[in-house]
Image (cartoon, rainbow, N blue to C red; front, side, top):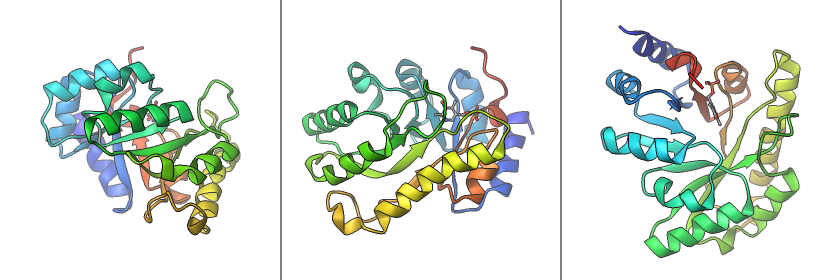
Amino acid sequence: MGDIATAIAGLKKELPSSVKLVAVSKFHPVDAVREAYDAGQRLFGESRPQELASKAAALPDDISWHFIGHLQTNKLKLVLPVVSMVESVDSRRLLEAIDRWGAGHGRVTDVLLEMHIASEETKQGFSREEILQVAEDAGSFGNVRILGLMGMATFTDDESVVRSDFSRLTSLRDEICGNLRAYPGLPENFGTLSFGMTHDYRIAVAMGADIVRIGTLIFGERAY
Ligand SMILES: *Cc1c(COP(=O)(O)O)cnc(C)c1O
């Protein structure tokens, strides 16, 4: 087995069957994605619209793509036709644009709301209050299904910081799910949590992640 197949097999063994693995293939070539595909992986994450569009065109149709990067509204037409989910909706403006695109194309897009949980200012996402506001207004977005939350912890070796970042996601999800009747625009199965990357996925799984997004561990270091 090649390194990619070995890494995927190892993760499949380690991850509980209820946890979905998004293999993050950004900045890695089509051949690397195909190797993962041949090892049985069918769910991939990309963070750049053009790169996603060209990979999706070059690779088999039974791949599910999740968009996980910052998405500009003028790039929706590259991304929305090919993804099964946009995990990284980080502004109300973007949510509205995805909804409008869906209305025009007869398509409902599954999304997660990205919450800003890291201490780095540079990372994007909604605040807790903004997410609660979007949840309240969810009924006005007829062409998106808001299925849950996504986040990225502070990049640090200090596990207590990572845990406390992640707990802001889990507690907000629990708060919303515990009072779902207050948010009639959210789907009944709201509650998906996507968190955990190469350096912190074990913590994420222990804390109840439904989706982990792993790149480096599978594909090696990215050439930036
Ligand atoms: C790149 C990226 C990942 C994967 O990161 P690794 O450290 O390579 O596992 C996960 N999530 C997001 C949003 C990313 O941009």
